[in-house]
Length: 251
Image (cartoon, rainbow, N blue to C red; front, side, top):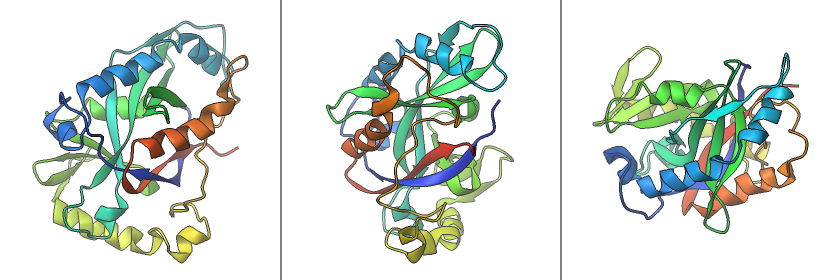
């Protein structure tokens, strides 16, 4: 698996007003099974794009075929409203559906599906590896998959607790809020840290990177629209607040 190095970009985030729950936790954030199905359908035709993605990755060998998994995992990113301690704020804002894919040589990748400006779900990023899927498959029933980008930590949010998916340590929501407030209170929107565009801060002018592995864009595919799609697409699903949401590799 290629290394993943995380930076943070600013996106607005809020609930989608839909029905037909995927799970209790997902329904609370407004994500529906209809959304998951539409997000997955958007990825269904990307086998050829993924084959080129794998072919152009470092160390690529012979051509591969690609299988896209039937899963679409909702991913939540740490909410700055929660960091700031706003009453009623959830720990995470919905960011994207993660859809795993596997090449015939065993390598994996993840498609990020977001809602476009036209209201339709579209693939906005390809990231190397199956990190989201690996953690999502560890979730207890009804839990949300929460990502804290600056420390690249993954959690299960359920029943008033936040549980690390790495070491299974659990804390209350209040305890977790105090932890992230200490880490990020000086990096919230409007802070000097954010205005300077420091990695890990919020900068409303930041551009979302189009790919998760830092490799070359697959040739023959119109990926020139991807950065704008990610930014506009996720902005379109949101109502207020900012979401951490950038993953890339160093050159």
